[in-house]
Amino acid sequence: MSTPESRGGEAAPASPASAGVPSDDWPARLLAARERLTGIAHRTPVLTSRTLDDRLGARVLFKCENLQRVGAFKFRGAFHLIAGLPEADRGRGVVAYSSGNHAQAVALVARLLGIPAVIVMPRGAAGSKLEATAGYGAEIVHPEATGESREALAARLARERGLSLVPPFDHPDIIAGQGTAMLELLEEVGPVDRVCVPVGGGGLISGTALATTMMSPGARVIGVEPEAGADGGDSLRSGRIVERSCGETIADGARTSAIGVLPFEIMRRHVHDMLTASDAELIEAMRFVWERMKIVVEPTGVLGLAPLLAGRLDVRGQRVVILLSGGNVDLARCAEWFASR
Picture (cartoon, rainbow, N blue to C red):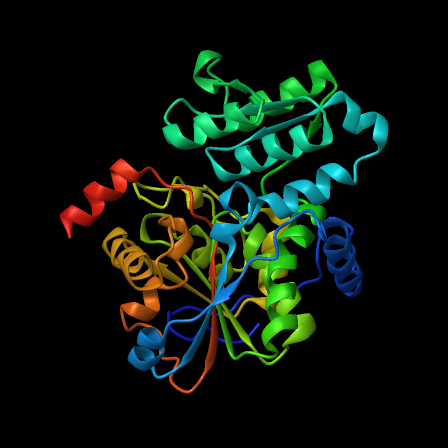
């Protein structure tokens, strides 16, 4: 990995991918995921904004995963993993833990495949995401009722009910599925110079980075986290996974305490830098996308755009990809955020 471009600290040394996945096996995994998802996942559009291009002096390409099924990229990885389970395991059902988009994705995939789904969701999750998950037919279990962590409760339910656990990011099939969004974009537009991606647990950026390395190896991949939860950047610079609680942020889809093990190993090899965005910057990025591009994007979804609008990443003369990761947002909260700025 090259030296970070915009933040201090040493670059993490390269290391082989973990969990028994050879680094040269990823292209085949990405192509297999694309084949499985063809005709199932939406091939989401690539949009542009002349206003933004003029402002940045660049050509900016938005991959609109906010228009994916369930309104987020998460559908890709969830379908790829669950559809690939052995038939007997798949038939018993699945369990997942999530505060939102992964929950909805697993619930919808289970409905499409005709299998049971149990989702561990905190009571404080966004009401729209709780309602959508239940609407897809999933059984919702709240960890507050047992006092267990979401992860521990999901693992116990998997054991007791014989369910297959579908993790939100730390699994080769999840990563390969998420990487298909970038495969689609690069097939459509050709090589690019810079790729800016939201980061929570690392599933999206690791899949995106693998696809970018495969099809546009000269591009630099930049991850963006909420300012209140910059554990990924700290991890990348220190060369080890840094775990800490995420502070308050409107980017609820990126409220993770640590990067996943397998995503981190991929990020060390293929991600060039990590930036952060404040909540105020996220609101301004949302406002731009809503007003100028006429599409609905959630705070986590605009993490990749926020540092560019804030002038903290110089992309003049470059072809830049912004991955809009999701569009599931509480409209009442949005009204409050926009009114506050």
